[in-house]
Length: 401
Image (cartoon, rainbow, N blue to C red; front, side):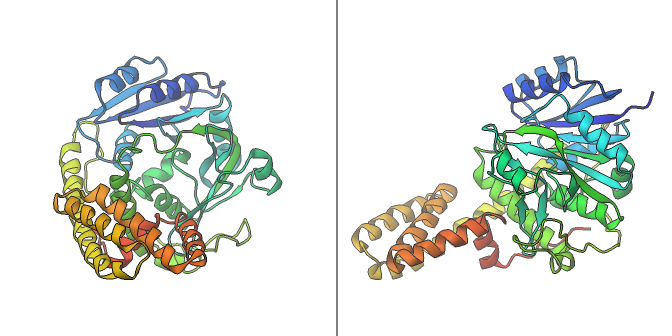
C-alpha cells in the first residue's frame, strides 16, 4: 500500500512541547500508512530521548548542531517515502482529523502544490488562516487575533487559494518538492524559506490551498523566544534576500485591504536552487553550517553596536531640546557605558525605546499616535527595529554561488 505521507518534524530544544506534539499526532484518525521523521537539530538529550522512544516516530536523524529549519527539512525529505511531505513544528498540537483533512484536500485538488493548515493560538483565537505577501515584502496572516466566529463572518474559514501558508503545518507533494530542489539555502537559518518555496510552486502553475478543517494549535516562537536578537538577525537577512529575489512579483502584490482572493503575479520561470550543504542522512554537515551562520550573526551584532553608538552621539546632541533633558542626559550616559562594555543587544533595545518615547513626548500626542500607527504597520513586515536597521545601512545581500 502506498505511503500516504511523511510527517517531518525538526526538533531543537523543546521537551514537553515535543511530547505533546507526538502524542496528539499518534491520535490521528485512520488515513492510511504514514511515517514520522524527526530531525534532531543539535537537540539536548531530553529532547532526543522523547524522539527516539515515542512509538509514532518512524525514523530519527541526529545532527550535532542547529543548522537551520530548511536544511533539516531537506535532509529528512531525502529519505522520505510518502507521496506527500507534511512539515510540522514541534510546538504544535494537531486535532484528530488534521492529517486526513490535509491529505484529502491534496487528493481532491490535483492542481494543488501545497495545502496550508488553520493555525490556532492556545486561547482559541486565530493565528493564521492562510497568508498574503504584501508589496513591501512583508506578510499578512489572515484572521490573526480574531475569534473563530469573527473569522467565519469575514469569510476567512473557507477553502480557498492563498499566496502561501506557514510551514508550521504544511503539506507539499513530495515529487514537486524534489523537482524544486527543496527549501532554498538562501534563506538559512530561518524565515521566508516557506514563502519562497510556495511562490516557486506557483511559478510551476500550482495552487496553494488553505484548508480550514486541518486545525492545529501552534505555540508560535517557543524555541526562539529567548533569542530575540537572533530572530531579528535571521528575519532581517532572509527578508532582504526575499525582497531582492521577488522584486518583480512584489510590484504586483496586493495591499492589506485588497480583496481576499487577490494574489500577486509570480510569473512562470524556474529559479535554480544553489546548494550550500549536503542534504544527506549519511553526511553531517551541521557543524560547518552552524559556524558560518554564527560568524554572520557576530558581524551583524557588531554592526548593531556601531549603529547604536552613533545613535547615542546623535541623542546627546539632541537631548538639550527634549523635555526632561537632565534625566535623559543621565539615561544616555548609562546607556553609553553599557555600549562601551559591548552590551550591544540589550543596550540597543533600550536605545530604541528611548528614541521612540522621548521623541514622541517632544512631538506631542499626535506624534505618538502616528508612531503607534507606523509600528502596527511595520509589524506586518519584519518588525520596526529590523526595518529601520535595513533602511539605514542599505544592506544588499547577494546570493553566493
